[in-house]
Image 1 (tube, rainbow over the protein chains, first blue to last red):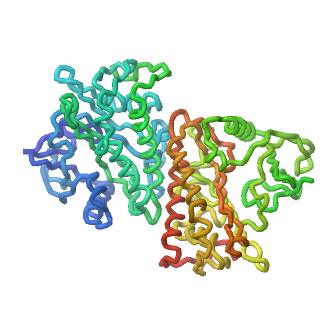
Image 2: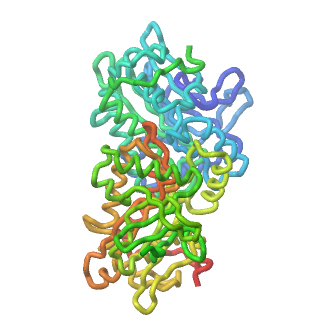
Length: 295
Length: 295
C-alpha cells in the first residue's frame, strides 16, 4: 500500500492530484523520474554511484540505498510511471525533526544551459546560498504531543542572516521550540544530537574528509538532510542524529577536481554547528525580529 | 633609489610611462593607492589587519608586512602620489620562481556593484576559476643561467584544464623547464619545495586550518603567491619555498561566516599539490597540445 511520505520537508509533494514521491510500509521510497534530463541524470548518478567500488562504506552510508527503478501508479493519477526506488530515510522514525540544507554557494554547474544558470544564479543571490554557502530548503521541528511540529514556510527559511540561521540550528536541538524568534533556544539536545563520537558533527567531518579528496563527482544543488528523534532525546536515549545526502539531478563528473563548491558550504555548516556546541548559550546581541511568514 | 620590481608576474606594471609599483633597496615595496574605492579598501584592510590582535603570528607571516602609506614620485611621472608601503616579497631572492594564483571560484563579493559583478562573473566563467576554484594570474619559472626565465603569456595560463594545470604546477618544481607542454616535467624539486615540514604544502595546510575557523574577513579576488629559489634547490640546499597572500582591494567583513569561497579554492589547490607529491611521475594520458601563446 503506497502512501504520501509523512515527513517530507522540501521538494515536489504528492497529493491533490500532484506528482510526488510515495512510500510503502517496507521502507522504500518511490521518487518519480522527472521527465526531462534531470530524471535521467539522477538515475545515471544512482546507477553509477551504487556500483562504484571506490566509494568506502563509511561514505556510502550517507546516501540512500538504491534499489533500481520500478513502474508504479503515479500519485497524480496519470497511470504507470517510472520511479526511482530508494531507501525511505524516515523509516523507523516516529516524530522526526528534519532539516533540508541545499549545499553550495552555487547551485549550477558550469556546463548547464544559460537559461538554467541565470535562474539559479538569481536564486543563489536572493537567498543565503551566496553569503553562507548553503540555504535551508525546508525544516520541521517536533515540539511535543500537544504542540506537534513547527514547520515554517520554506520561503521564510531560505534567506536567513548568519545570526538567524544559527538561531534556527539551535532551535532544531532545543526543548523550547516556540516559533517566537526572540525566545533564546536552550540547546538542550545539542550535545546528544550534534555532539559525541556518533553525532551529526562527527558525521559531517567524515563527509568533509571525503570531499577534500574525491574528484569523481560534483554535487550541484544537492541537499544534506539532518534528522533525529526528539522523543528519544527527551527520554535521555540516543536520539539517532544522522545526515543523509539527497537530490542528485544535477550531479556531474568531477574530472580530477574536488567539489570545492560543495566542500566550501560544508565547511561553513560545520563551523556553525561547532560554534553551537562550543557556546550553546552564547548571547545573541543582534535584535532578532520575527521572521516573515512565521507567526 | 626606487626601481621597477624585477620579479612581478601579475598586476599593473610600472615603466613606459605607466603607473605601477616600485621597490627600494631596503626591502620595501611601494604600491600606488588605486584612486577609486579599491585603493581605500586595500588601505583599510592593511590598517585593520596589521593591528588585529586576533591574527596569530603563524598566520600573519603569510601576509606582507605593512609600513603605512607614503607620498612618493609615481612611476608614470605624474608627481607625488600616495603609495602603500609594504614588505618586498622578493627581497633576498636571486632568481625566484614565482606563481600568482587568484583564489576562489567567485572573484566578486555579493555587495559589489552589478556592473562589477557581471564583469567578474564573465571572467570567472571564461577561466579556470569556476571549474577549479582558482586561476593562474601569472608565472615565471627560472631555468638556468643560459635559458633564464620561462614566463608565458598570462592569458594562456588563466583557462587551464585540470590536467594542464597539474602539468604547470609540476613544471614549477622541475629541472627540465622547456616551454614544450608535451615534455613530462621531472618534478625534481617537488619534495623540497612542496613537501616537508616547512614546505609549501605544510604552509597551505596551516592557512587552511585558519580559514576553516576565521569569520572576520572574506578575501575576494586575493592571490596566493608561491615562490622558491631554484639555484638553492640545484645546490641541494633548502630552496625556501613560501606562500604569501597579496591583493586585498576586494576584502570585505566576514560577519560571522567563514570564507567558504576562498577555502574551497584553497582545498582544490591543496589537492593538486598533494597529488603531485604522492605521484610525481604519474603518467598523463590526456594528449596535451601546446598551450596557445607559449612557443
